[in-house]
Image (cartoon, rainbow, N blue to C red; front, side):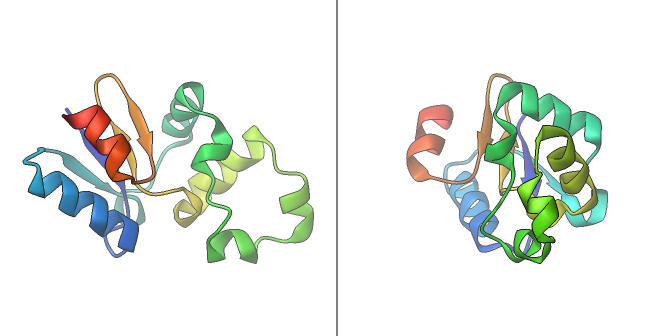
Length: 114
């Protein structure tokens, strides 16, 4: 089973979902805004990928954090922040039986799904 995590109005999410649909890849969609994300799930992802890959430092949510928080960021704090502010999680995060994909690129999708 493939689960796509993200928010529906994100441009990157739209590109990823369009690619999956065009390539007839069935998936379940998990909307962070409506369903949230647990710290347990975030910790599991951090075991599969570096926590810094999950943290979106380019978005407005990151920029709104105070400088002390940004300067002292570590895995534990990042997980807390991502659980509270799901917009700061890089999108999409895609779970397959064997892989965890973070972000969207045609090349990585083709490697995993073809």
